[in-house]
Length: 218
Image 1 (cartoon, rainbow, N blue to C red):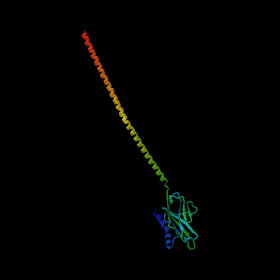
Image 2: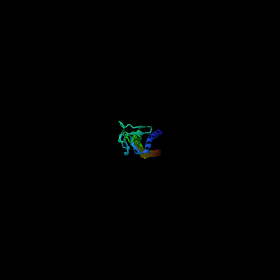
Image 3: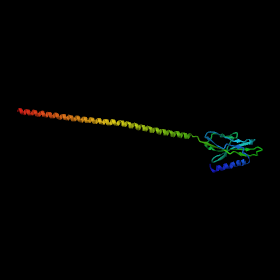
Image 4: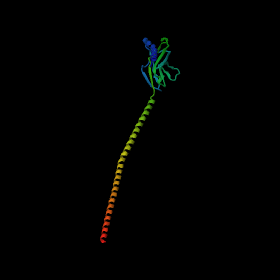
């Protein structure tokens, strides 16, 4: 909070300090911080001491915020209302955060119009965390989607690797089978050529022997 806020609070609290030096203050407030969320309501308690009870007491509430201070409108107002001496605030917003002081003006004959101000209660209103929850759910969904995609890609890679490895032996086996068939064909051709040569040599030998016989007969 800036200096103007604390200066205003100090100037406003001076009558309280002076009155407490003479006699006991008639108003008391819990010196604590009250936490609420936006949209909720709150009751800020204020108690009038029994020795100050008199007729013609006029109650007021003041709020000191970071950049302003004001007297609350307690008459015909939808947001603020008095419950005895306590202040009821509904439909809270973050800008309702501040220090709230209860004040009273005593107009009896014995009091001679004295005024009393309590030390104040701090109210802090926090915004709801709906946006934060949405962000968390959004990021969680994104992370889960990324993990699912990674697992799916890993599974596809493994599956393709296994299928390729299973196909490689079949390919080598097919190649060896073709080589074996090729060798068999070459062997068959070679055998046929050898057989053909043998047949040709036998026929040539028979032809030579028959020619010799003819010459001998002549």
